[in-house]
Length: 370
Image 1 (cartoon, rainbow, N blue to C red):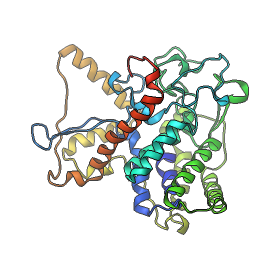
Image 2: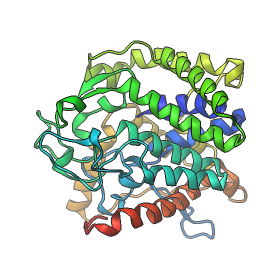
Image 3: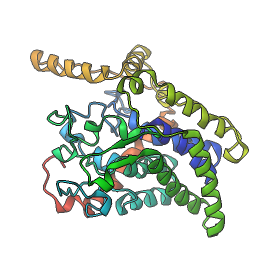
Image 4: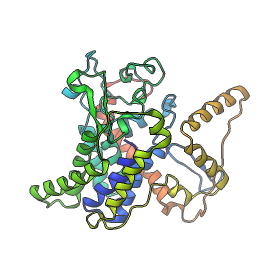
């Protein structure tokens, strides 16, 4: 899933489930920012306010750093039940790290986050839970198990759904996963995303209103799904890599629909802001030139991956290591900022996820990178 579900739909789900507008905004922003939190910032080095964040995603999925391998099965590809019927493949292969929808590990993580009432953790756990639907039948590990047939079959793109490109993330796309048995191979993303929305809404609603009765919950859920379905629009089996990456016309129409819904009284009655990946970061760091450079790289797809590759080559040839120094806008208040609180929540939720998935999955494996 991408920003459409993780930010816009998550906001609508959260506010519909009983969170106040600002709370729902924090949950939704955290849910999406987990994908954009891919830079390690070394801030205020040599001072008592020195801080180094954890990343929760890496844009260069074809060449992840070994030490960061855990972010995939912890935040984006939570392992589930490899024996479930929907995971049955033509080649009969199984993988212990295979992601399956609504699995026990993802439920435990979301329940643990809800128990803390920490909105940042809730948003991140919602992200991870939602991705068990979109990323089903892919493993957050470098393995040929993930490869689809075609030009990318022998490429290094064997982590997660890299070989499927962006197909699993597009809300209205119907596509085919030819690794699976014929009865499992059609992927109707709209149906899948709506199922994810339904389950997330149920969990959030019961958290906010434990007393809610079954009929009331069912009615509210149905209303939500009708609205989200209309906002997503008609499904299509047509996929264009160029249009999806560069033009994004259809995505803009859908986002406009989500924003219109946010203005409705039953979705908080306040138009949601468009997502800005630098909103929280801009509030705490100086070094505007360096931040502007980061923003520029984000605007051009895959530029960051290319520049990272060139920087690695430069470091290898020269023995030098290019690093940036960042500083707090206000060293007396940065700990109260949303960006800092999000980063602390990343570290804490990662520990929780490692306890859950480590005990249930990792402990039964001997993978070097994990």
